[in-house]
Length: 248
Image (cartoon, rainbow, N blue to C red; front, side):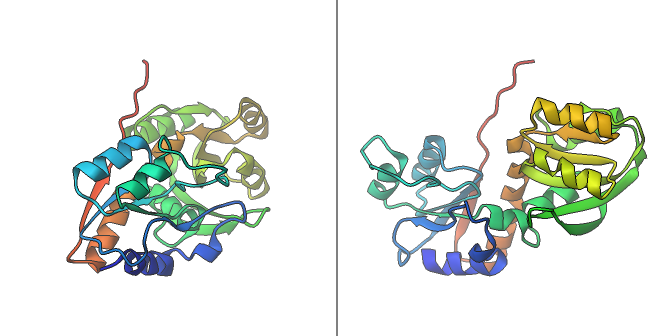
């Protein structure tokens, strides 16, 4: 199987034309006709990711975050793109199109944290969010639940009422507090939340949870491996989860 074959499958699952306008997705590095016997799946394409791929003899890296996001003005021997090409390793990145797709990042996050009756919600800016329900519980208890299922650190504000309905946006989604208020959700689970959003949420009676950018998105890696293994029986897929260190 080739890089192109794998990209075509992923593009069927998570069409690149559904990505946000600012995004850069698809096959971003390498030869589409290259044969693939081993592929590595990770949230990011860092030097650690690349070294893991080289160590395992992979011809392809599949990531969520684009390895090339902003336009490149140069490529030197110190750049990861240079090293990828030098080692004949291609990269496919599926970002916001994978966030919103069926069985994509937001769906996986909803299932990981145990939400029921999962539904889609079109945000005011057109982005596709997910929502679900939990057994009514306090903000503190829900924070403990998020910690136990996602790990990392949970930063939150208490909206002052039991949580039953939850709006979800993996990664940076603090601005979707507007949609949480508009549709009267009890809570919003996301990451990269600015301080003023916590204040706004508390004043609005909404519990707002910052569960970590890595933690709310890395949950796609293992399900994606399973999807690919079911489709490509003759390719070995491995996963890489970089170690995130938190100071207690």
